[in-house]
Image 1 (cartoon, rainbow, N blue to C red):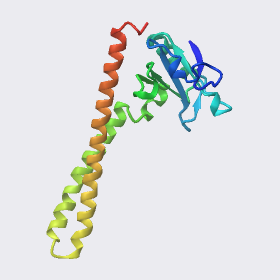
Image 2 (image 1 turned 120 degrees about the vertical axis):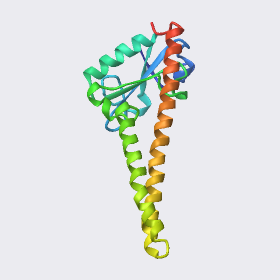
Image 3 (image 1 turned 45 degrees about the vertical axis):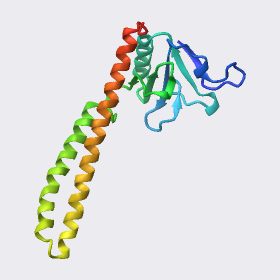
Image 4 (image 1 turned 90 degrees about the horizontal axis):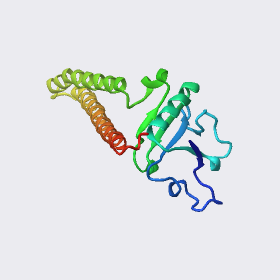
Length: 185
């Protein structure tokens, strides 16, 4: 493992993306509560210009070290990227097992969003019926408005789940490609 400052004006080339090799992996840590960049042990950088990432020669080594780091410091989330850096979503996001349920991409969160979405869709049906039965008066406007918004919000949640599933599928393909290339150590 090598700690590499993200920008070093004295280094040639100065940007970290020009230094990392194509077969290496970069790990970026941030505090879960605030999202502030930190090192693998959860210590915030004194100066944002001192921000750094950890560079690993294999995916397996990166995963092992990051899992050990979150075991030591549970308030840290670590994203592992390939050599392209943040141009693509992370190959892997490592959090402490106690905090895994708080992640938006987790299966529990997707299940919860689906339940809420379908609950909204089902609950909007009686309001739509009420709105159509009261169509001759102004009283039908409010239930119709609420029902339409419930349908829209439920649809957005289902669409979000679909997007998260597709992102996860692409991530899994990238991880499998890394493993097949022999870059996982």
